[in-house]
Image 1 (cartoon, rainbow, N blue to C red):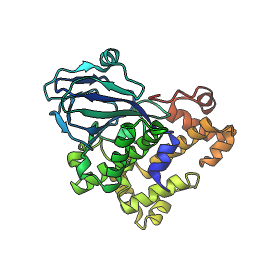
Image 2: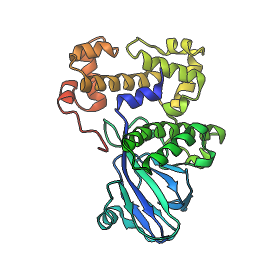
Image 3: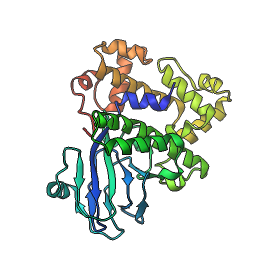
Amino acid sequence: MDVLADVLAATRFSGVLLAQLRAGRPDWGCGLEQLPTAGFHLVAEGTCWLRTRGRPPLHLVPGDVVLLPRGEPHELAGAPDATAVRYADLESAHPPGRDGVMDLGGAGAAVRIVCGKFSYEGEAGRHPVLSVLPEVIHVPGMSADPDLQGTIRLLAAETGRNRPGARAVATRLTDVLFVQVVRAWLELREDDGGDGGGGGGEGPGPSWLTALRDPRIGTALSLMHEEPQRPWTVESLARAAAMSRPAFARQFKALVGSSPLAYLARLRIDRAARMLRDTDELVGDIAQAVGYASEFAFSRAFSRQRGIAPGRYRRTVPEPVGV
């Protein structure tokens, strides 16, 4: 079981292209307020600067990608000290054309930045992937892996052409870009001994995402995602991971940040929430499908984690975040 793919599918995670910024002068600046979900910027041409609170300005060059997993307020600018104008005001003064480009003018060396965000179903700020990533992830295009470089080049090319289907192709590529950026961040963490280096530093702490890099704990996570309905115990998971029970419990808690059974309980409720949203199956059948012996036990567990009963949740599913 591909755990990351399962989590993204469960939350209907998808990319959305917003606009492109183009400028031919160094005195431009664009300020973006807090977003309810993740945002990203890809420098397709030229250079610019990213400014975020509490960090020095970051120089971005062609091929660089910046991911802001929780939509932190930030500014893009043509120079480290250029004055930033609110995005809404820039959009009003320079409406995007039919190609989606917001042209800020200027006859000098051009910079073109592809901007987008991601939507998902669930509660804002609690996405199981976004919530465990650092506030800013910077992946330099020149040092990225060949697969990511290929996606960056293709996305930059598709957004720079007025060809049939270009926007559809570019939108699909944003999903690929997200996964590859997360992979690059995980690899940077491992190469730098866990601090992430140029990838944006550490996330909030231990998580299932970083634990996937451990072959034994990753095996246990995969098994739970593949068959959450099985009556897993710490002992059975430890056997599957070829570890003793005490060693497995300690290692799982250290890497994931919760006990194996606490993780399993959340996984079951998340899977049940997905079934409540996407199917017409009876609540009792869903309870059995995710490993609960009775509808009553499932309803109690669901209400405890989600703060709402399963039936009511089905009737009042919130709108996707970031749409």
